Amino acid sequence: MHRRTDEVHRRADEVHRRGDEAECRGDEVERRSNEVERRGDEAERWGDEAERRGDEVDHRADEGGRLGDEAERRGDEGDCRSDETERRSDEVRSQGGRAGLAPARSRRHRESTRSSLGALRAAPRTPPAMTPRTQYYTATSLDGFIATEDDSLDWLFPLGDLATSSYPAFIAEVGALAMGSATYEWMLRNSEAVIAEVGSAWPYTQPTWVFTSRTLPRIEGADVRFVNRPVRDVHPELLAAAAGKNVWVVGGGELAGQFHDAGLLDELILQVGSVTLGRGKPLLPRRILSPVLRLVEVRQMGPSMVELRYTVEREASAAER
Image (cartoon, rainbow, N blue to C red; front, side, top):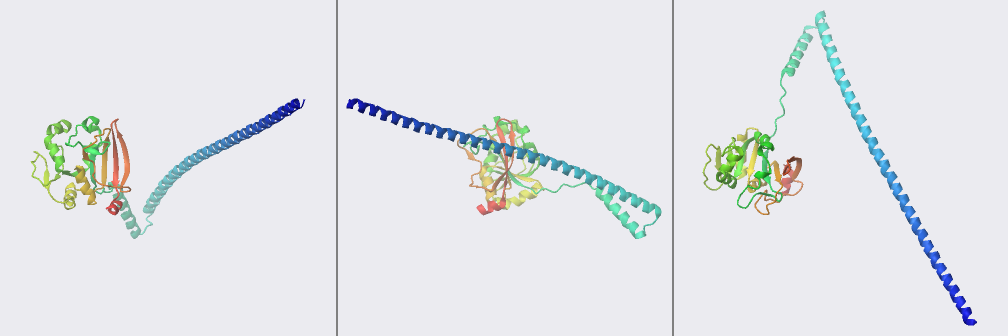
């Protein structure tokens, strides 16, 4: 009898224990349900905030458009008032002349003014003169080489057509060239390829300075001056020969580096081809850190090349050196 009573008590305790566990689990479920609900409320709040900011952006865009329209309207009004003022001024001058009311001095003054205004209207507008720039214009592989180790450019020619690139516009603004001996010797060795590409063994009409310490043969019909002096000493001759146009540093990379070292390089115009060479002649074997080079233009040249134009910040470059 006592054993049965104990068994009943044991089972009752077990029922109470399991009831307590179920109650704990219920509390946990309720807690998690509250957490889910809280996160849902938070997500809804963020959604409302995103919608509010979107509405604010739309409002500002509308306001910008309205201000633009207002500025254009006021500009048109200003033009109309200017035309009206000029018309009335002409009318007053005409009436004064017919009535003979203006004294001689005023008449002479008006005639002088009209003459000056007529001369200003008749004179052609001269665009501001551009400062000649010294530019390094070249093609490069993605990994920064302008030629293979044996100075081959076979990787370059399939990438694009010279006639459809920026080259025609670029060369039209060039008045003098500077090139290293390796570049010049490449043209000597590959005269047939140059003729096939541009129609002449020497495609430049501008005078060219070739920097070399050796005696090199001349290309027939080429206006070439061989020099063995620092670029700083030769640069004034290049500018004088360019006569207001730009100076093109044709290459290679070491010569462009010397112009940079001397603080004479103004721009880099790089046509980057979609190839890698692994090894070769480097584009610009110098350590040049930001903010010396400032990217000012990017232009895609078909599916295989992109042109990047950088200006050289002279003050930052001098500080780096």
